[in-house]
Length: 209
Ligand code: SF4
Image (cartoon, rainbow, N blue to C red):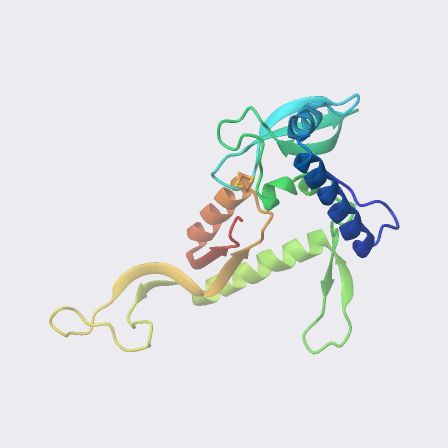
């Protein structure tokens, strides 16, 4: 995975990329095809690293990845050319999966603004987890219903003969879940199980690609 050099501006990076592209295009125009050399260079292992075949954690396409590990640390993740599924390619999300494991910018605290307050407070993640659990429990207890007697517009439910009726729903409409882009397959599985067990029906996830 390429890393931006410190101090390299976006403009300088784009200029350098354009120049490299022009140089390659110019060589191709002269009959020199460097693509085979580029492919070989891509397959050269990173010095001192062990390559571990793996599978992208993000979606059911199941693209193969090569995870390079050096001294117990992940140093690179790229597409596995031997995978018949993706043949070395990864979508933008899979190509960034290195940052799922190694990311110094990962937020480890949350910002909380109490009702009516003007200031944000920094809180530990464990505090936020407890708050969410308590509020989910309280909301579900207050809004869970076993039977529905009204339709989604609030009108009375009626049977085929037009008589008032009710139907079993076992749900709460007061809680919704919006999954983030970096939730992996296993997390999504557990999340969906938990929410459905609670009776939550509004479950949505960000698309994969
Ligand atoms: S998220 Fe992208 S790279 Fe990962 S398995 Fe799906 S398509 Fe492949």
